[in-house]
Image (tube, rainbow, N blue to C red; front, side, top):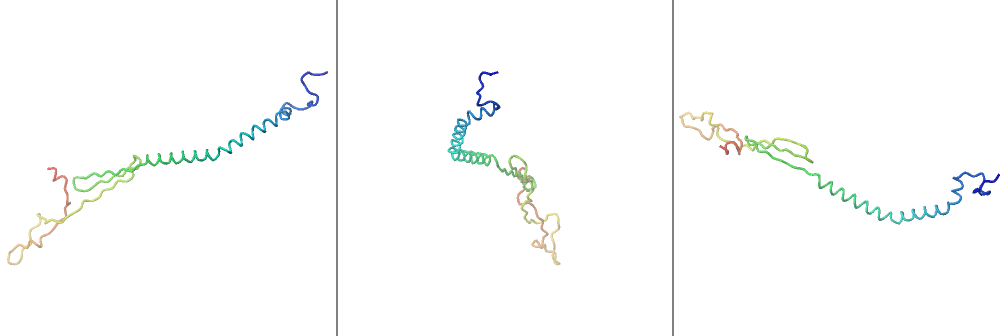
Length: 136
């Protein structure tokens, strides 16, 4: 019994083996052509990729920011808040600059003869700048 469409030289081979035997040269040529084209474009593709990476890193650097906010409190101290990318990073209080002034609540020392010794008066430290007093 003879079946039409079957070549006697290919009898006993599977369909996959038949396709491999018939089209291996054309596929090989097509594949090597694609590989060669990709190799030719490889340096251009790498340059494009590096340029895009640099652009992305520059954009990320522009988005990162540090913000420092200083609040002057009524007693003269300064509250410093540092924000990094919109989130609180550090918060601390700088004490005010103090200056010596005569203490009015303490009595003035007197000498044995009854004269006041104003140079030996007790001193106290107060903030150099008082915001609350400036506002009133």
